[in-house]
Image (cartoon, rainbow, N blue to C red; front, side, top):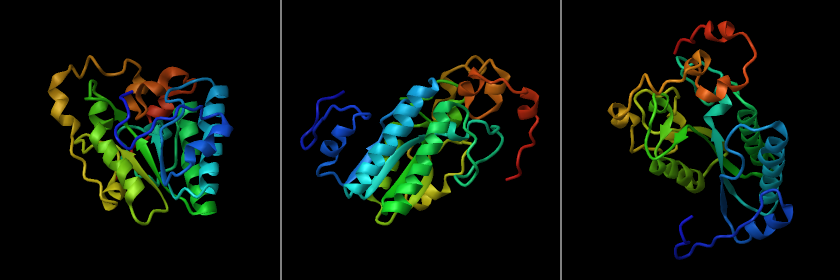
Length: 240
């Protein structure tokens, strides 16, 4: 972590330690919530960190008078959709992992704290946030750091916000997701994964598992799948 800049303060705390929440929230107007497990894990740690601790923190924040939360959700909330289906935030979740399931819970939690406490929440379904795209899937899911920062700023600064779900993705030509709501909120992506399309071997970077290659969740999908791949791969793409 870089040293804090002028006006910044770093406070180390354990998200699961409720006794630290009040101290973290003192004098705060808004939260960008990036805490939690960001990969697949057993159910017990996912439940403890991504569900229980996140619930405690959000509700404590709401009761403390925090008026805005930006929640780092994930594309893995919808990872079981085929790649030829163009999704909107209104499409039902189809989480591909326990991790994705926990992020779907976080989005519902965002709706809850808005309805119950009036806290404006922006849930950002982050695609693949890296310095640059390095595989074929990232040409659809990549988000640059500056584009993601722009979305976070929108979540904090939009004057009137209920609970909204947007896609954390740059302006990629091969994108799978309809991000019109983010554009309505003022999002203007500066980057496009296509700029990097010639920098790597597309075939060599595709997933080996046919299910992972066909579904939006990529490698997360095939890790523990025990169903019938033909059923999923045989789904008809929805007309858009």
